[in-house]
Length: 236
Image 1 (tube, rainbow, N blue to C red):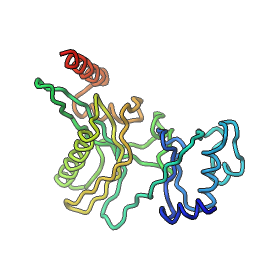
Image 2 (cartoon, helix red, strand yellow):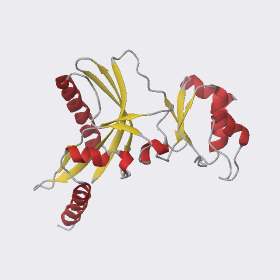
Image 3 (tube, rainbow, N blue to C red):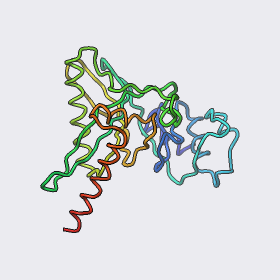
Image 4 (cartoon, one colour):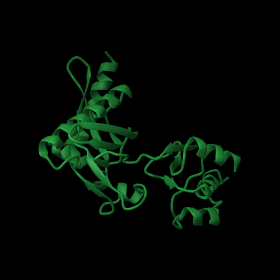
């Protein structure tokens, strides 16, 4: 318990625990009690996938076949909350890279989708199974259209900066929380950057691309075109 006590001193409960190198909401849990944190670490640091600890699974309310990988490290994050903002939402936004005539990278930042979760965190099923998730494209930042458009532009600019800083290639999807204090204060809190996001009906990236007038096959064709240009430039 000493380790757990030290951990919650640095990251006060409630907190978010997740595998350090996994994705798709796999084993991402909201931890509200020390008992839950102990159970989480028991499950994550077990020796084999087959070593399912029934008591730990019960405390975490895991489903019988819920994915819970075995890892050697855990990622602990402070829980992001609304605070005193006027509006708080979770979004996921895609983007597509272009290479101009001078070989410089440019980004088309799509309108983000608002991700609605039925549980404490967005589940694997909500992210990838058609009909399971509730995603609204474009995201609803404000009721007033002009204010909504201004906030959208600010969010896109933050996404652009992140993509340039991380040297994103091809395409990606960024997940983030947004705190809004009307009319113009916008805080973007990044969750993660998906360098190869899934392309299922529930992941929204095709919906976002459609707003930019890309049909699904045209969007994929653009990704391939970027790859061809990169290869050509590397050989020059």
